[in-house]
Length: 480
Ligand SMILES: *Cc1c(COP(=O)(O)O)cnc(C)c1O
Image (cartoon, rainbow, N blue to C red; front, side, top):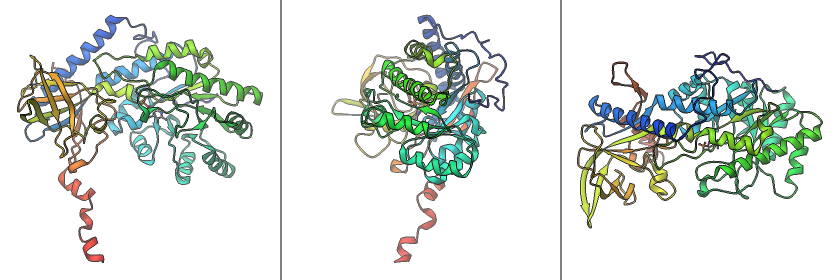
């Protein structure tokens, strides 16, 4: 069985966990959920107030991203506890964070300290994981379009690689022939169990671009043979989730992969596949502060659907992204102007398509809660007004929320887009050359106040010019 490097730079993870291994946070009643939601909201209110007071946001810095460090740690602990509670003692489990959800080095470092590994899907993401000090043994490479150079680098480092398709497996054949791989190697399959409510995020449809489509004619037999012909192929990967997928469907996808692993091992006459990588994809609740569905719910559903997964015969890798970070981020934007048009109140803020591209372009799939704070950073009360919360970009559809009933936003107030810690402010979209905002982590300062730490500084105008060909100003006029 694969032995993961469970040591991290900052914590001895072989000893008792802070929760004493009791699985605290698993058997959560409604009270626990409400408490967690209330705590998160209280920390958010304090942080917004402090961000205004400390000048992190204001007339000259009208947009900032904030991350709740205690919340991130709590989610990491909840993930570990959820799987600990259903897994046979001693089973190697690597929870690899899908770096694409929040590709910020200090966040990766924090998660590493919380015993979370990294799932990377590009040379850039691998570079971020390495910059965060995450060792190769705790990193998994999964992208659908790896170049030969990327594969060679990953194998040279000993990073786990999941091949996406037969052509990529052929490339691995070539690399494995020239040197015995240090890397655990696997194959990604698409169980084709069907999609969820968001087509663009459904990875297990019949025609998804990811992995080997298991139900296509002849595919299953091809996969089994591929393993039997390659004794070094020891992992099996599937990721059937993401926002909009029902948990039952995700669990069914995992069950399909498990069944396939059992078949391969049976026909190999040995435990050739020693590790199942079950992907991520736990959806996020964008409707309230409650952290639902909880990791415990999914882990228990998996244990009920695929009991053999947790009996210790397989090492496990998970790849959760959004569910670890989304609830812990806020985009905080100043209301520059409050106006009205055609009877509609409109707050013109500094948060739009550049920080919330998905919401702006696909508002039905990606609605965000927007909380209103006054100019001092205190939560605003009603009576609610139907209004648009607009962004700063120069197209009419640049709206964070349309026709939303909420406390009126006035000039100088703040609009906070909630649940944006994953796939939002770290995914800048350079429309109108709007600058990437700074991101700060927050936590208690030990004296009843809030302490902020820089995660990323704001993009400067010089950087925008440089990244927009500033060094080549004469290249077109001079060359032709
Ligand atoms: C995006 C992705 C994930 C993470 O998905 P989330 O919905 O953010 O949990 C995990 N594995 C793979 C292969 C992915 O592409």
